[in-house]
Image 1 (cartoon, rainbow, N blue to C red):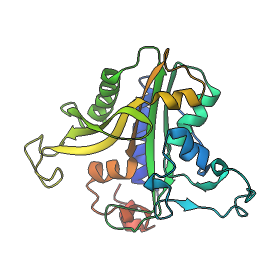
Image 2: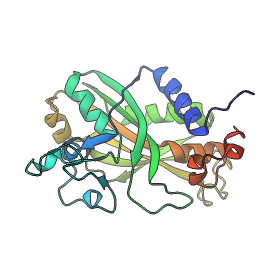
Image 3: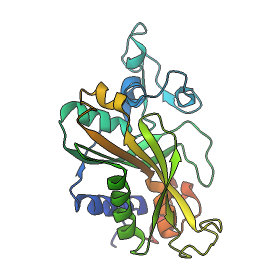
Length: 250
């Protein structure tokens, strides 16, 4: 009997294919991260709520192989975002840079139909001498049109993320009702789909890339949420249930 590729794996494969077609490379990084790569290098303030225990799975210093006298940046945790991969990659490569980073991330939060303590993200990063917001919009519009259909529109709304400036939320026009309003888009005609923006100059400085010469954009989306929309899955926890009745549908 033939097996089935898990729906999350299908979306990751499809996403990678779309992005590599326009020149992006795949970059990977460790799931066990340091505070430096997960927060500090991404311009996340020391007092940011994401650093609190309710949002992150921290390892005890002795379990992580870190001296209790070590600096804060060496504390270890299960990564909360694949953005850490971008920092590691920029430390080792000079612009032009054009990567995507798919992978599992972890958040210490209660689970429900739309939230899990583990889930998959896909981050994107482009850095060169001429990158701008129009390039960002064009890139994600290309992706979503190839994923959800050629009529898909993208709009950007101002938002805040510590590692980008300016920051935006990206919405796509509802692929089910074509913007007329339905249960998927909560009758708005739009679906909030990802956070993005232009890479903050302090992030570039931190990896020794001159922000006066180079600019970049970054974006991040939840693969689980994309899969729920794409396949009509109503509970994210089904993806991790191990129930073959669920997997065998795809």
